[in-house]
Image (cartoon, rainbow, N blue to C red; front, side, top):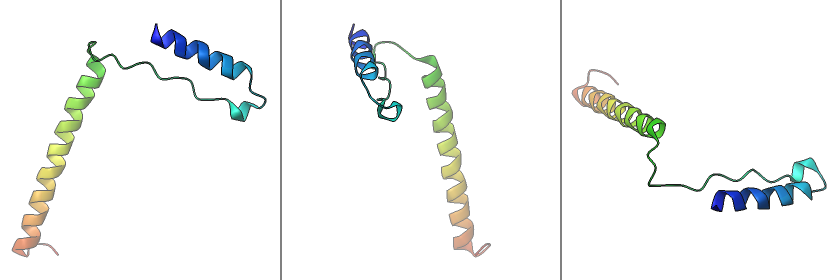
Length: 71
């Protein structure tokens, strides 16, 4: 219901603008926390794995710098 009202409001504003450059951005859908988005969950897990790998590389690099292996 809320999404429909946002789109109706957006269409009314979009129909009454003078220039196309003044056209507002289309509304984003209302966040529904009770629905699980598998794509976002998968991307979240991938992101966490990439961050952990980056942190491990940083620790290794800092250890090598501290040991004087690299400058």
